[in-house]
Length: 263
Image (tube, rainbow, N blue to C red; front, side, top):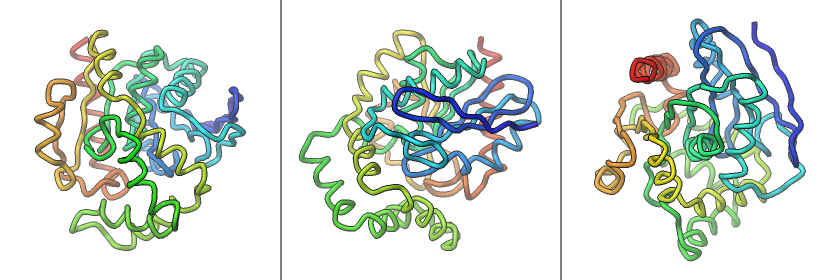
């Protein structure tokens, strides 16, 4: 049975789903996305895992009163919800920006295995970007948020990606309030991934990055091959969790099992 619950935390009321039995898995969506992106994946994983999927502030069904959120604040929120649900050693799985949030959740004391679904591997977003770089990326979003979201989705699609899916994802993402969306994207670009990964490594943590082969640059491996276990996958473009949910669920399940066997 799946339960939809809410938890009140400073500045936000978080909506989340939890269900299934077995090793825990926490699913964290990406920027301007929502927990429903994981519906098919969560349904598959609940066959043999206890799965929690939540909406971050200003996303999906979560209601926020605080406009700006750092990655550390979002990670603390995920850690609080995970702890309240009793998933203390759960694997943390984050898509895109959700991977940065998952890293911060781990640093806040949550979870075990860390899995990034096409996250942490884009050099124009990670590592920390200076003010000029942030301004260049954010300017088109300030001019026309829906148009730039659509352009982002088109750039993130693989050659075989269904254009109808790209249109659907762009429409869903464009529903996020523009001001809050831009603020959160800026916060992602301000996040100091290098420092976060150093802190994580000091605790023995090394995220597995399941990077879309279509989107992956060789420069990422050269820069972060020691800090990240980068594994190219051929499941689609940046939104491969929507293109191939069965393949994504199978990859997550295998990594959780691999992490358990290494404990």
